[in-house]
Amino acid sequence: MHISEGILSPPVLLAGASLATAGVAYGLKKMDMESIPKVGVLSSAFFVATLIHVPVGPSSIHLVLNGLMGVMLGWAAFPAIMIALALQAMLFQYGGFTTLGVNTVNMAAPAVICYYLFRGAVRSEGAKMAAAAGFACGFVSLTLSILGGAASLLLTQKAFLAPVKVVLVAHLPVMAIEGLVTAFVLAFLKKVRPETVEV
Amino acid sequence: MKVKIPSPPAAACMFLVLLLAAAHPAYAHKMMAFAYIEGGKVHVEGYFADGKKTIDSLVEVFDEEGAKILEGKTGPQGVFSFPAPAAARLRIVLTGSMGHRAECFVQAGEAQQERGDAPARSAPVLGPQADEETAAGREYLREIVAQEIDRKLAPLLQEIRALRRSGPSVSEILGGIGYVIGIMGLIMYFKARSSRGS
Image 1 (tube, rainbow over the protein chains, first blue to last red):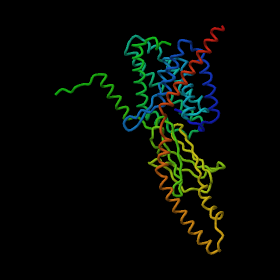
Image 2 (cartoon, rainbow over the protein chains, first blue to last red):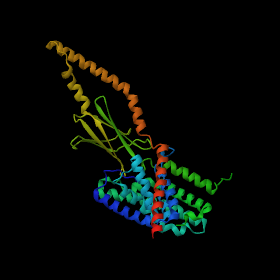
Image 3 (tube, rainbow over the protein chains, first blue to last red):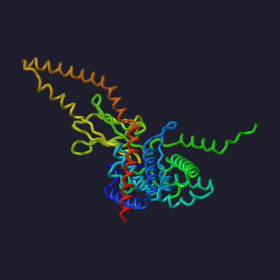
Image 4 (cartoon, rainbow over the protein chains, first blue to last red):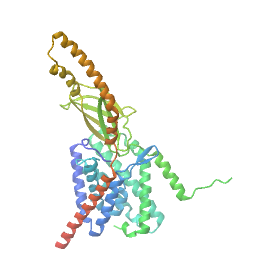
């Protein structure tokens, strides 16, 4: 999902950059003083989670956590994700500055969508309901991110695309892991710091 | 005998382990490409940030003017080799799946050019016959020295490549987190100023 530089066509890059700018501006406006530390913590979590590959058995995975960010931050997920992506591009050449907008939109837009889809369910009293919503949140946000990445590539050049279905099926385990982690984190936070799950 | 049914948390853990075992290796990882010349051939290697080799990825080779010289695919070892062409500086682009792309440069022609030019420059002034003989001997010696150097440097190059493909270090990651904290401080500062102003 960190699409590298030099792949996407200028119109796609430009569209991504303008959408990301609008999202970040709105997110910054929506952010109040009390939520800033939370945005910082989740931005750091995203920065580390998408950077570190956990070797598991024969392969390795990394988390994205954008569903979690969406439910906890709402629109502030946009600035949080863009800051982390900019730092990754600067420090590690993950992604790049020209693709910063597209990558931000591909990860932050699903976060915001999940915020609207699942915020009620995640905050519900029933523990089972909240856990299920947390799982769905992580799962759906990653799915949408992959679809977003695929769409960006497809808009540039059809030849880039391995069949979307194959890509999605290959990522099913990672989506499920993302869902489980999101559900566990949300359940834990609801128990020890219920106010953090409120937006 | 009764079959023991695992408790829900244990079942969840088992499920997680099964999922992890099936996880796709090349998922959203940074990709890197390296090229080096060995024995008159250019070797291109690709890696993901976790050290996995990039298999069956497109390799394109461009010369200085940006014209494509050749293209190929990395083999099961993640390597693509081709005979070193005459162009001095090659740009090599490796394209993987899902928007991964890496570039690297290699000085291909330069080494060969030097080999060709050097005798003419430094040939001692002897008779024409002796000149021919020493030139042949010189060429032979040069070949041996080049081979020896290649052999001695191979482990060193291996090590450099291993260093370059290692992932982000702890200090870099901590530095990034520090930046995030700083940026949040800045946002707080500006928010506080604007709210005081209004």
